[in-house]
Length: 478
Image 1 (cartoon, rainbow, N blue to C red):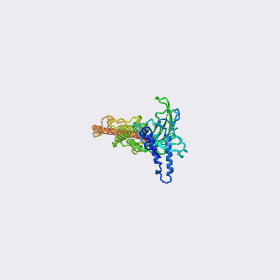
Image 2: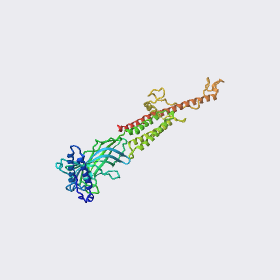
Image 3: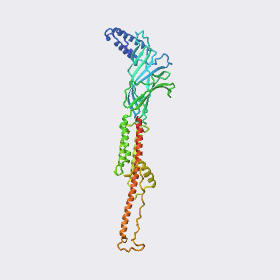
C-alpha cells in the first residue's frame, strides 16, 4: 500500500512538473485500485492483492530511470528491428475523381525494448503487463503517401509488454492514401493501390522495418459492395532519398481491387446494347412506310441520353474508358446507318428522268448479290433468274400503213382506214406513250429492287457489326 507521513512530500508540486511522472503516478494508482483487497471479494482477494503489489513494484522498477524520448537500445550504433503487420478491416471509400482511397486498418507494431525486461520468477510469475503506449518509446511509423491534410491523431491504445522486452502495439487507424486510378477498362477495371509505411526520422542504421507476414490479413475484412479484394501483398524496399545520405527502409502493401460490374452492366451497358440492335432494323423497314429515317434519329437521341448518364457516373481519366468507346462506336454506326438509309431512299424514289441501271449493277447487285441475299419479286423463287433487260424505247414516228391491193399508188377504197391519217397519228402516239410508261415503270422497278438489295446487304453488315461489338464488350463481364 502507498503510505506517507504528512509533510513528507512537500515538493509534490515540483515532482508533478517533471516530464512523464504524472502519467506514471496515474498508472500506479490504477494498478493499486484494480488489485486492492477490497476490489476482490472471496477467497481470491489475498492473491489478487499480492499480484497488484507485484505489478506496482514491477512498474516502479521498470520506469524509475526510463525515458521514452530515446531509442531503447544499449548500443546507439545498433539498429532497432521493428515488425509491421496490417489487417484490412474495411474499404470506406474510393474517391476516383480525386484519386483518394480511405481504409480502416488494424496496425500492429512489435519491437524489443532493451530497458524493459524482467525475470518472471522475481515478480510472482508475471510475464506480461498492459500499460499506456505513451509511457514507452514508440517508432514514428507513418504512411508516406497519405492524402489527408489533417495531422493524424495519436492512438490511445495500450501496449503489451512482455518479460523479455518485446513490445506489441495494436492500434486502429483510418488512412487516406493517394491511389492512381486507371479507368481505361471501366466498368471491368482492376486497380492496385499502394500504402507505403516507414519511419519519418530514423534511417536504416537506426530503425530497420520488416513486414511481419507476406501480406495483410483479410480474415476480418467486411465485403465492399463495389470492390472485390484480390489480395494485399507486402514488399520491403530500401530507398535513398536526395535529402539524406542514409537509406530508409519501408514496407509497401499493394491492395489489389477488382470492380463489381454487375450494376453498371444492368444500368448502362445492356440498355445501350438493346438500343443499338434497333439501328440495323431501319434497313428492314419498307421504304413506303416513311419511318426509316425517323427510327435512326430516335435511336441516336436515345444513345445521346445514355451517353450523358454515363458521363455523370464515369470518373474522369486521361484515356477514354471501354464503355465510352463502345458508346461512341455505336453512335457512329447509327449515324452511318441513318446516312445510308437516306441514300437508299433516294434510290428507291427515282424521278421520271431516271436512267437505266448500269450493267455492272445489273450483273453484281441484281444478279449475284440478289440471289445470295434471296431478294426476289412476288411469285419468284429464291435464287431465280434476274429481271429481263428493258427493251429499247420505240420510235415516236410510226411508219404509215398502206392500203390493201395497192403497191405504190393511192388506195382505191374511199373508206379505207389509211385515209384517216390524223386518227392513225393519235393512236400511234397513245401506243408509244403506253409503251414508254411501261418501260419507265420497269426502270423504276429495277431501281427499287436495287434499293431492296442494298438494304438487305447493309442490314446484314450493320447487324453483324453491332452484335460483334456487343459480345466483345459483354465478354469482359464473364
